[in-house]
Image (cartoon, rainbow, N blue to C red):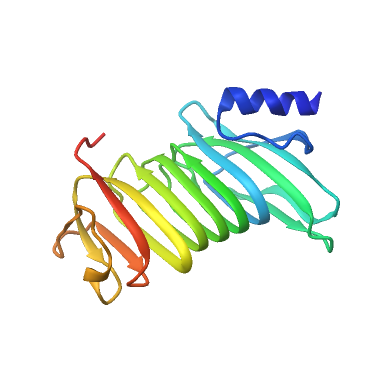
Length: 226
């Protein structure tokens, strides 16, 4: 029955298919959460903001030949911690779907895997060692995204007050932003980063930082501010 449920969620939610070999879902629900903090070694995670959510609801699927050293969701104060680390066999798998209030702050650190973030308006801090970050319909005033190896694809519905992009040598990013003026702090050599139509103005407060100066970032500017 759990495997059949996973297939249904893949079709209805349309946020990516769930491995039919994983067990679950195991559901957890937490009230009074301001910040969700994920620290996972290897995972596929989707976090989506819901205007109707009054709590955080997490569905988790897990499996693999090796046992987990840590596999846990716990709340301390108004912070929710999600931890997943493999055991000695390093063959565990875990998948999360999390519904949160749209204003929830999200901090996520991935060793490897895929993180999807949709319709979030709280502060974002994302670090990925090897994998993908896909963000759509974002309204975060502050967003900090770091990818060592892999890709980041981010689309903002509203202009962030602070956006930081930090990429390794084997990482690329594509960022879609509303048409606004930004202070473009692109390391020491602003001409090294294609601005893609960004209006760069050193006198405005709204800021974009890119590191290093030769980071593979492509900006897209929309004239239809939402």
